[in-house]
Amino acid sequence: MKKIVSLLLMGLLLWYGLAYEPTSQDISKINMLKTQFDSITTDNMKDKWDFYAQLKTLQEQFTHHEQLNYYLDQLGVHLITQVNTEKTKAKIISKASKQEFLNSYISWFSQDITTPDNCTWWYNTMDTISFANNFPTALMLATRYRETTCGYYLPGNGDGPFQILSKDYGTGQMTEAIFIKTMQDFIDFSKNKHLSYKTKLWINLTYTWFTMTGLVYHSALYNGATVTWSTASWWVALPNNPRYVYDGYGQEYSGALRYGLVPKFLKVLDWELKNTY
Image (cartoon, rainbow, N blue to C red):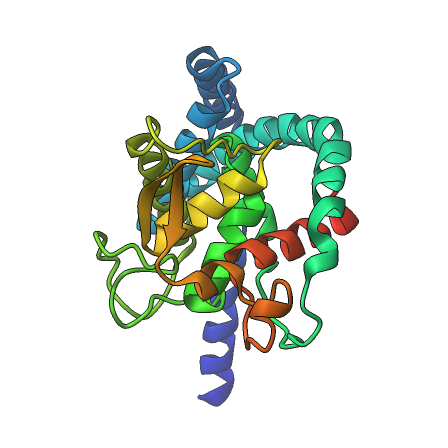
């Protein structure tokens, strides 16, 4: 009896482990769909990413449908390959200016924060969605670090890894599709925040270019700021909690356990330039 049960279990495992074998008709349909995707998205990286994100959501909803998953996987690879190809070009073009920006501020780092973190886990996905949305990757990683120490889970308050109070993602297990949604929500939330202050504050943060002023203003607004008039600088955003922005940056903010958004942004940028360019 044990031998028969073992043979049955082995047969089930083999059946579930077999990859779907596409037919010539499947391949023809997939190639047709790829052409249709390309005609819709052309060179628009945001559209390509949005389609990719939808495909990942469908894959999680139909995990046991092998043929459908094969289609979704092939189309997803097609789209993400195109986005990553253009992203590589953008990295090459922007490397020198990003290094120059980093060199201007890196000497202000506090050396007393040594706690390791896992923020570069999922970097490629975060980098690709940042590129598709023309948003700084390092800012996304720095915010996730400051808000939830880069844990891959849904916090108990339901506000997600970026702690957006207006969202409710539930709690507990994180999936790739949910994580992608939280990242898109973070970028949309940030850009809407910038837009709402566009007549007062100059915040220009893109995938290939950023300023320290824009970075500080974004960081202040994200956690809470007082936007006020300054005769010397016109309108400024003063952080209600300066440590959220500057912890670990310069002598005044040394002694912190974790970096604030600005120094963490620079730390991530330093890692990026050394490891991904």
